[in-house]
Image 1 (cartoon, protein in one colour):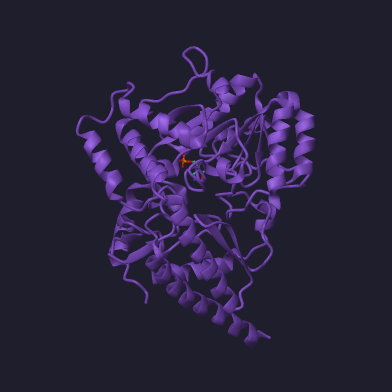
Image 2 (cartoon, rainbow, N blue to C red):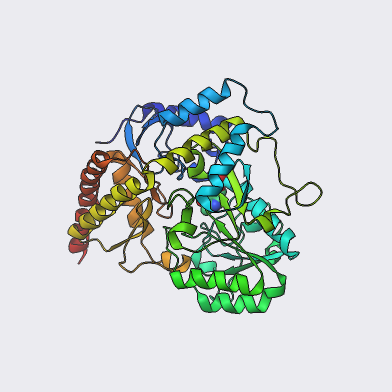
Length: 446
Ligand code: PMP
């Protein structure tokens, strides 16, 4: 059952010679033994360097909404790049994309970039320029990308160091950034109306924005309390503060209009990336016309050599057309619901306390408790070590999830009922292996 990893280990040893930790993004390092090296993907599957096949529930941290190497997207990109990939000038394809994008999201205006980080960075700058204020509220465990202003108390923070709930510390996520910029940010627990109201009143005339992930896509898909989300919107209106939804994971995945459509709460600005391009690097900041109007030469800088390049624009144009014209999200939700229900039944049968949080297109399996988490602090009460054992059994059997329980399981349009059935059989085997053994060990110890 243990897959052969000879070539993977050889390649990884070489990778480490030239690339720090052998990976091009820290999150991809799973230790010297277990860091995967993948060579290809098709539909719901990926293959590693030893040609072991996995059902992929990582989907590149979420972007692959249609499936790997989705033929129609590949064809449209290949066709477009025959005529060049970059002009640093507006192309017709960007205009077609912007028209569809604004129709689907309900946003008035949109600017393209390449990564979620860039889109959020621009959103924050636009909000600051529009309001003439500098501070912002961010929530514990929310991740908005790899730029300094937002890298405090994110999904890698140690929960026990977060400090008092009513006056949280702002924990730096990385060395190498100026400590003083934490003073621009107010950190709050997610889903807490009372603390939010207090902070808004106290800081209202300094606040440019509230930025949030409308599902905690980097901490176990913790859902927003609908009353809290509505209150965030009301308070932003009351104090003229820009509400930014980070829809990098939720955009075009929860609904064609993202989390805003799904939860029925509208943001002033939103950042999109991931599912927008089915894996091609493309992102966007979008929002109300009045706010986006600050983006102009001599006023608010927005730009980049590769913003709106042909590869990105063609990929997004094709992906969004498919999402808009085919039952992509409904199908993913139906299959995802079956998978969630199936996992729930399996875990109940083996007697494992658990919670499955999130929505069918992105969810998380949490072990050790059966009460849903509401914020980053309550997530920390789950048993991530036990999840690690379960995850290792799944991966060994060919179900590729992230080794970190905070990272969601993602589904694509290519995860059809046959893939779900295959997954559930493997998940049942893995659960029996882990939890029957755990129960036996407990009985022996008792
Ligand atoms: N926001 C959210 C909610 C994300 O999940 C991520 C990436 N996981 C980002 C922003 C940053 O996106 P990127 O990695 O494309 O810069």
